[in-house]
Length: 118
Image (cartoon, rainbow, N blue to C red; front, side):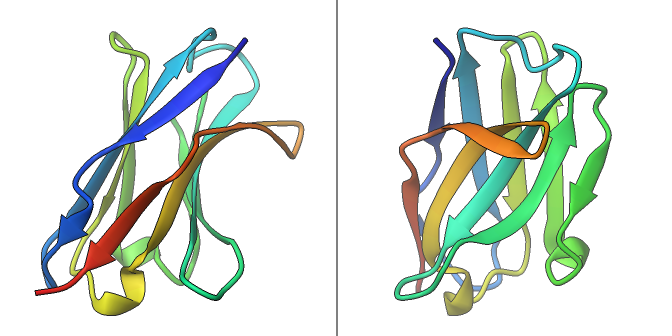
């Protein structure tokens, strides 16, 4: 059974960089054809795709967030990380990591609340 767990600070100050880690168990992030994604849900709004990192290490980002986003991985610890720079209160959201296989988001983390506030 694949499990994903987000971790990171719940409070970030404006203009700082948000950094979250997703730890994966029950499967390797380098296994062919799996993609590992970050998604967020601001309060009162729908889900927003942030980006993903492929089994190969290639990355794709949402055009609206691309200039501020970086997704990387640590294969030795089976983790992938989101960094979102220059945050504002509009980046306040529940952040999720998820696995993607043939366009289906089949496993999700429980989500972690991140609030941007001074």
